[in-house]
Amino acid sequence: MTEQQSLEFLLFSGSYDAVLERTAGDHAGEAQPVFVGALSLSGRLEEAESAYAALAAREPRSNAVAEARFFLVAGLCHAGNAQKALRYARDGVVDTRADDPRRRFFAYQALAAVRYFAGRFPLAIRLARRALSSAVAASFPYARFLALDMMAHVLVHTGEVYAGLRLLSQAESLADALGYADNAANERTAALVFRLRMMLSDLDEALGAVERLVRAPEVSYFTRRNGLIEVATMLALRGAAKRASDALEEARQIALPGSDRRGKTRFLVCNALCTALSTGPEDATALIEEARASAKDQLTLTAEVAFVDLMVVGRREPAVVAEYESVATTTKIQRARVACDIAKGSARRPFHVEDGLARVFLECTGRPPFERVERVLSARLYGLLPWALSRPPGKRVIVTALSLVTENHGTVTVRELPSRPSVKVLLSLGRGYQSRAALIAEVWGIPRYVPARHTAVLHTAVSRLRLGLGEPEWIVTHDDGYALVDGVEILTPEGESGPSTTIAPSAPDDRERALAFVVKNGPASSADVAAALKLSASTALRLLRSLAEEGALEKSGSGRATRYHAKND
Image (cartoon, rainbow, N blue to C red; front, side):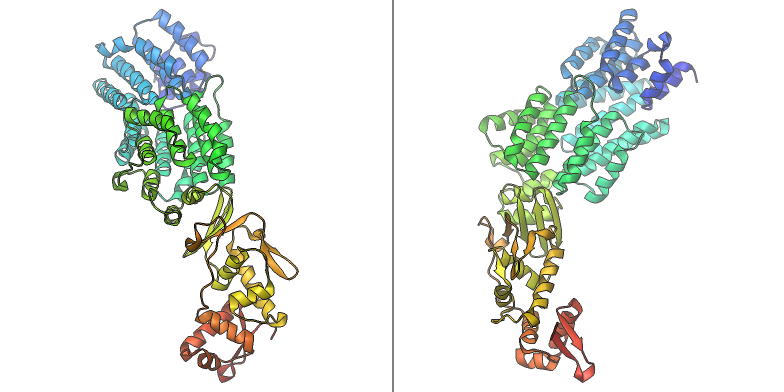
């Protein structure tokens, strides 16, 4: 392999630092397009422009200049400088008619990149297909890899998610076959990021896989930064506010010097989403406005802003919606289209949408709050609970048919319901401070509170409630009762309309009746309970055994002499 081939291999495989090390101080090497490419794709854009200008002055219409121009355009696009990238790409339009298919490829691919980052997706994919044809004609495998990657990204964004992922897989296989390990890793990361973003895989597995990959040394600067932003977004949607903040801060520290509009805009969009879900949409408005201004003429970025602004921040000003509607029409980006349709009240059926997150928003459209709560819980998008309830983030406990959900300003835990008495204690405390006597009367139906008999039962119920809550310190113990900390609201499906509502406890079930009988009357056999409560012998025995196993009752004796009694009896 010649020195030129060696440098080219390093560039094509994504080893930009190695190229720069090999060409440092080497004027012959610095005159090559690989040097411009390595500078451009490692974010050193001012140096790249200077090196390109020197090369173009010596060889204005050469393959080397066409190649160097393409890499410079790619670097400028990634940094968000679309206007300058477009000027360079237009300089190469004449090369689309060149006899050499390799030069045609670089011209078409540069134009496709500019149109892609500007959000002109229909034009971008047409140009990428011409680039692919030129790459095949030139027997240029690396060029085929680039064209396939471009086409894959366009398809995913415009809603053909699975077709795009298949092309990403083809691009990865090609990179592996060529020995371009870093590029293959970038394709795997892109596929995983898309699966995470579109909710096509188990969320926990996808999150873990992306977090590992973006920290791998072989992935590119751009892949690492964008991957961390996607991780932060999904963590916020999952109700893990602190982890989302940490990932976002890590992404913030990966920045290009000078103009890095694309990175800044995506950071602002993610920050707005995290803020809206943890402190409220009003606090996110300034961030969204800054993101809109930063995106400017880059429609791809504006589409990302639109989705978060309309869906999560919830803005509905006609002028804002009209602006986003224009973006959705021009780009054909599916998320922007879904967001605009929902904002205008013209949402379509979700069955044709492959994007899992967009589909959840569509499925929630027009439904009452607690049906939306059930949907976001089933999708494990716990961070969307305030959105589902149409309330600002806060401190609240939501009681569903199967779960106890605790929300604390963006941090959400979901656990199985504790025992029925524990849930009733929670509902009672939702109305304010309750004495022990009041809880015993309301929850167990025992009119007279006897501390020696009843304190242990109440303590057990409260302890289980604390274990069931994600925020155990929200239950405060007083000398003669319990209360919730200030600002916590309790919500149930039956009482969803009030600001802090509960449902009245229903009549005790057989289990609670059995417990109340023993607490009130002292040690009892299963036959005693069966006769008093008009239960079958087997049902009474099963209930008493269950209560004993859970610690609500104690068991003594054996055989016919077995008795069940409250603790401390």
